Amino acid sequence: RPAPPVATPSWEPPSILPYSAPPLLLGPAPATQPTASHRDVQAATKDPSQCCEEYEAYLQSMRELQSPATQAIVDYLRLEIASAVNDWQVAAPIDVQVFGSRSYEVELPGSDLDVVCLLPEPESGSHGLDQYLLRGMFQRLRSDPRCSAVEDKIEGVTTVTFHFAGLPIDFSVCCGGHPPSQITNRVAKELRRLPGAVRSLARLTVDTGKRFGFCWKKKGPIGKQLKGVHWVMLVVAWWRHCGAEARAASREVGSHELLEMVLRFYADFDFEASSIYPFLAAPMFRREYPWPEPLWLEDPVRRGRNLAWRIDTPEALQRMRAALRQALQSLTTRPHVFWREARERWSEFEDRSYSAEVAMSAE
Image (cartoon, rainbow, N blue to C red; front, top):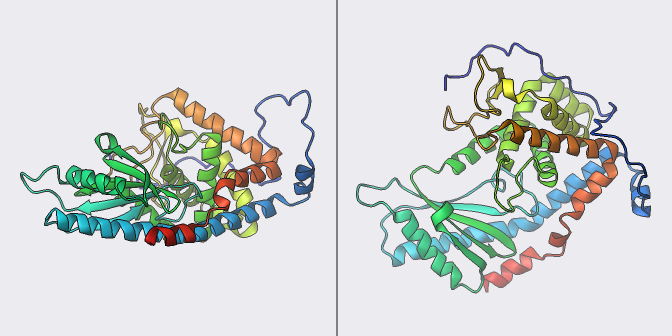
C-alpha cells in the first residue's frame, strides 16, 4: 500500500451529539413494556454518569485485586522457563513479556493473561526451537498440581493455555519478532501520551463491544470480528480525529457521554470510503479509489497490513454496525440497566481471593 497522505482529510467528521440528543431507534417500540423491578426503579434515580463512574471504580478495584496473581504468574513462568532451559542445555537468551490488554491496562475482570517467551532469531539449522521449548513447558505445566486446564494448542497457534492462581493464561514461545508484543508496546506508548480518560474510554468500549457483539469476547472462533486491541486503536483514532472537540468533551462530561459519542461516531462512520491510521495526528483519510477491503485499519508496526482483515465482506461490516447501534440504543434508552448488567457479568470474579490463591500456589 502507498504511504498515507499527509494532507488534512477533505471531509468533516460526523457530528458528535451530546448526551441529551434523541436516542437512535432501531425499530418500533414493543407493544407492552416490561414491568420495572424495584432495583431498576431505585437505580433510575441515579444520574447515568454516576452509574458509569461507579462501574469504572469497580473495574479498577477488580484490577487491583487481580494484580498480585498477575505478577505471581509471570514470576512462576520465568522460573519454570529458566529451569527448563538449564535442564535442556539450550544456549539462548530468553525474555519473558506480558502482552495484550493486561500490559496496556485495558483489561477486564475476565481477561486472560498473555505471556510470551521471546527467543533470538534462529540460526541456520536451528529451526523448531520455539516448539521444542513450548512442548517441554506443556509437559512441565501438566505435571504441576498448581496448574489446571492445561491445553496443547501448539500446532494451531503455538500456544499453551492453562489456569494458575485463579486466572486463565495463554503462554507462547516465539523466535525472532513477535508482532502481538510489538503492537502491544505501540499501543501502550500511545496510551501513555494521552489523558487517562482515553484509556478508561477504551476499556468501556471494549467491554461494551464484548457484550453486544462488535468485539470478539474470546469464546469460540473469532469469525468476522475485531479484537479488543483493534477497538482500543479505534478509540485512539477517534480521539485524535475529533481533536479539540473530544478534549473539551472529556473536561465537561464523563465517560458515559464519551462512550455514547464513540458508539454514535462509528455506527455512522463511512468505513467503506475511508482508511484509518490510528496513531497519526490526522488518522482518518478518504480513499482515492475503491478498495476491496470494506474496513481498513493500518497496522502501526508493519506498514501496509490491514489489522481489520477479518471484516472482509459488506455483510460482516453491516453486522458490526448493527451491534454498535444496538449498544447505543441500550446505552441511551436504558442507561441504568446498561451499567447494572455490565457489572453483573463479573459477579463470579467478586468472591475470588486471588492473594490467597497466589499464597497457596507458592507453597
